[in-house]
Image 1 (cartoon, rainbow, N blue to C red):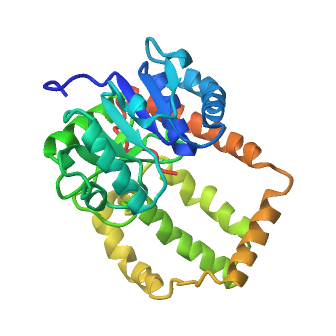
Image 2: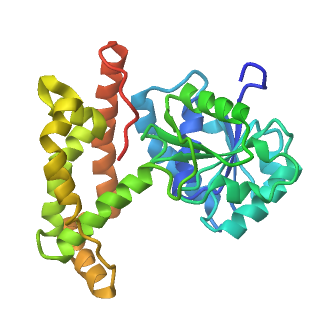
Length: 325
């Protein structure tokens, strides 16, 4: 970013759950944020989200100049992106919608302005195909929910994305305290969602096949491997699992059993009956807790884990990868 204008003003397109969370984070990092959304009541919902998220952001530490007063809102796209240094797009996951939007943005924005998409599954090559002027500044900057707390951002360039754009957006997100991963090639769903999808497939199979209840499979995850995954990734844990022999010994010991399990992993069909079984199991697990209750529970534990990881990182004991939930 040394050869480009510093990013001080961010335009947020789409203020649903992800867009609102991004807005809260950018404000907490001392940036100016202008948001746009045509949905009725969007501005009020956005400001309410930011207000509710602010105590958690204060707990993690606000940057100099951080203020909710630096948030502005307009339903007019052209007004929202005027003078923006970066656009964080959070529109619907519909390729034709994205292409129409990016065509507009490409025509309206200065060539130096990065257009980053929060898309969780569409490829940037598809999206940027609508940009005839400067497709090189378009990139995927996919966060993990909620972006104002979870550090992970997946950066994925399209076929026409420049190396400079990748470097600039990586530097920007990193400057906000995010943990970035760069994909070397485009794949549907990027990386973290593909990992989740692989795990979800087996979770759904085990419940559908009456191996375990919904509550017990969640307990097995969050009180077992989930605790470890909040500290280290799978490969690092495999390295530890090999004892003093490390990853080499792990493969010597577990390649046979592990690959044997792969052959019998489930491949469930999400029929209406299977979905009902999963839904009924989840509601039994939830009990009387509301969505807001569950989100508060999640965020409180997340905050504690992030604070601990930040403390360990600052001590120089580890340089751990970004938190994925």
